[in-house]
Length: 185
Image (cartoon, rainbow, N blue to C red; front, side, top):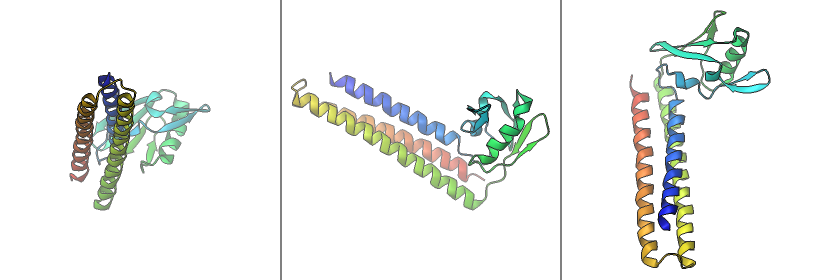
């Protein structure tokens, strides 16, 4: 009975970890990465469309992204969306493709990005702890309703804490790895 509660909580924690990973991919670390543009939304004929769905995004050089838009009429729209995004990149449009040169990161910008990673990591940890809290309340309710014994409750709480610790450790490892990548010159 309590195993289901723990399994559900573990699944939610894994999803939280996945969201955190996706967020980290969108933080630029001085290298061109096509996933950098995953969150850029283009106003395409009145619909908010993710940029990767409008064309190919490739990285021909370590510090450059090239966007080959399928609908050439949408080039100005894509350019405008990139300028409006929080990426701080200036697109250059040659009428066929859009080029984005990723500038060298300054020490100050590296520190800002590092703080952003810490903030995202903390948000992920808070979400994981919230999942644990909900699961613990559910377990206590099961015990109160006499569906599990006190011993089972204690065992379940211990297992839940181990699951939470593993999830938080995963977030910390991802954050440390990303921070190392950002601080690399």
